Image 1 (cartoon, rainbow, N blue to C red):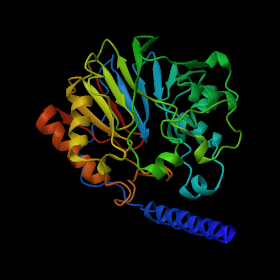
Image 2 (cartoon, rainbow, N blue to C red):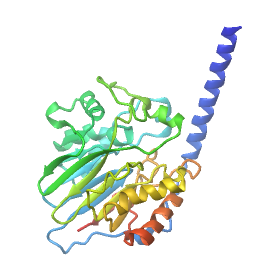
Image 3 (cartoon, helix red, strand yellow):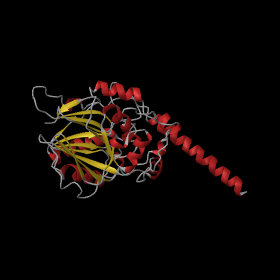
Image 4 (tube, rainbow, N blue to C red):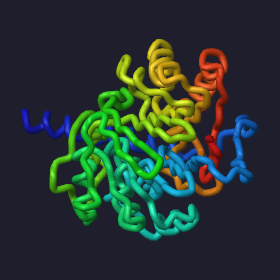
Length: 335
């Protein structure tokens, strides 16, 4: 009798997981890019000999350069499909990474800073480091991913909280913070608040990419300061000692939070640092190839247009600054 009950429970669980996976697949099949915000895109100026630029590649992958030094955040290009994520092993697409770096005209990087160890942040970073001779900075979990990928220890740095890292005129500080709050099922699936031990599998599944702790990245430069908040999580008062005119703000999962959470999040990441320009990131469906335009997830998964509208309104009314929405491969001049 007990064996029959146990078998029935396994069947029910299997059906539930199958239905959830199918629904997730269908809801992430949207092919429509965001519309209505194109007028906010700023193009780079070309008449200034000294300038600091930012290029957005999608999700939280950003390239910052002052013409002498270049640093990259996360470096995620492969973007495995939902089918691969749910039912297969996920590995970097080396040819795609190489061609993407060529499109960016990047042959050398001073560093790659990894915000946390989920696949959409850390998966491709070791391969990018190999191709650009960059040092990869992140948590011990990210370091274990890099070691498994064969990146030499000389190119791996585990970062303690608030450690300052100089690269040319850049001075980067990685500040330990919190990841976006997520539902219990998704927290289990993505290893929320869990670390990655060594050795990391050579053929990993989605569930192998535990979060490993999350960082906010503060970038100082003589031309101006930048904050990259990859995940929409926060700690009260954490960023008050830092100043940043430009904030690249993660909004994934923000539509599922309470109105109070949103207001607190905006305050702790924008008002706290004195932001004047706000650029949303982590708004696109990272389970689809970049293609011609980034597209958001289905609104039942994450209502990105609403989050962008909320952020735009807050930027206008509270920050009293400018709001910039970037598409894949867009480059803007920050200073």
